[in-house]
Length: 124
Image (cartoon, rainbow, N blue to C red; front, side, top):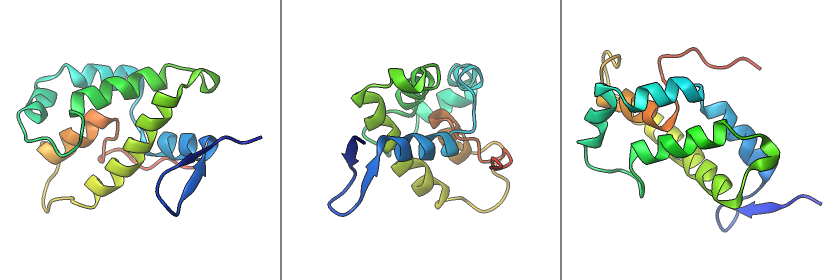
């Protein structure tokens, strides 16, 4: 029997669907993300007003913990965070600024969540 998580009043996704979407959006490894979270660039994100109910660094820490777990070890709280990531990253990607994003707060914010917009998309 599949367990279902309700995302909104009209959309229901299985844990497998949530996990797959999360893995598609996160294009940084746990080590790479951990290293970034302690960089001077990440600290710039902390100085910005929060756009989410949790800080980017806290989101990144939670993402690292999920990436280091086996699928079977994931908790309800892990799936709740994955849903938050699935909602946040596409919304932030849609706000892409014009010009070079290499050293932008926009990019660093996304990287703090585990997505580097400069990386090539994953191929399936």
